[in-house]
Length: 85
Length: 233
Image 1: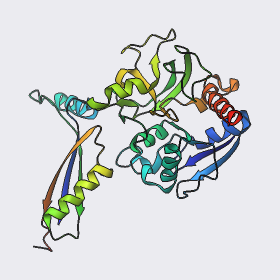
Image 2 (image 1 turned 90 degrees about the vertical axis):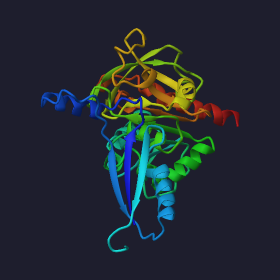
Image 3 (image 1 turned 180 degrees about the horizontal axis):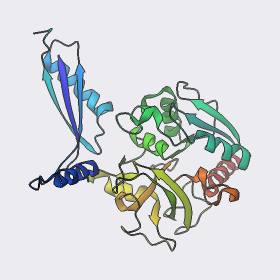
C-alpha cells in the first residue's frame, strides 16, 4: 500500500509562500489567479495489506508528527502499489 | 543552581547560553546531548535556538521526539523550570508544552534586529525581577517567528502572553509587529507558569560589551525564583 498525504495550512491563516508564488504568476501574466496555497506532499510506502488499517495508522502519523493540528489540515489517499495488486 | 543546556544536531545558540550562564552569571552549567534522557539533576533547562534536525518537516517537529525532550517534558510536568528560546520555543510548542505554533514571518524575510518587548506578566519565575509594562530591548533572529493559534486557543494565548513586540514607549501595534505574530505575542508561558518560550534571544543581550544587558533580567529572575524557593523549602 502507498499513502499519499496532502498537508496544507488551515483556512484563514496567511500563507506567505502562496502569496509570493501568486505574485510570480501575476508577473508571468496569469492575471486570472485568485489565490495560491502552497502545502506539503508526502508519500509513504507501507507493508499493510488492508487499506483501512493503513489509513488508521497514517492518521496517527499525521496527528503525532506529519502535520501540526494547530495550523494544518491534511488529507490521506491510500492506494494499492503495483507489487501488491 | 545547576543549569542544563540542551544540544541538538543543528543547535547554534547553545554555546551562547552556556557562556552567559557560566561566565556572566557564574552558574553551574552542563550540556545535555539530544540522545541522552538524563537531565543530570539540573534545576533549570534551556532549550536553545538554532536549526535542530535541519528544521525538516516543521521547525521543532523532529526535536520533540528526541530522548532528551521526553525527559524535559517529564521535568516540566513536575514543575521544573524550562525556557525555550527561538528554535527552543518552536520545540516546546511542537512538544505541546505551550499553546500555539510558529509560521514563516509575514514579510517572508529572515529578521535579525533588536526589538522592544513589553512585559505583560510578572507573576512568572522568568519575569519576577521585571515590572509590568516595562520595555526591554532584546534581538530577534528568525524566519519562522509568526506566533499563531487555533481559534480555540485564542483566549489561552492572550492569557499566556508574557512579552509583546512594541515600540520604545511600549505601544503595541501592527505597524511595530515585526513578523505578523498573533496579538504581537513574542513569548508565552504555560498555565502552571514554569515553562516559557520566546522568539527573542535574551542570551544575546546579556553583556554591556555586546551592547545590551536586558536579556540578563530573565535569567536573573529565574535564579532569584530558585533561591527563594530553596530558602522557603
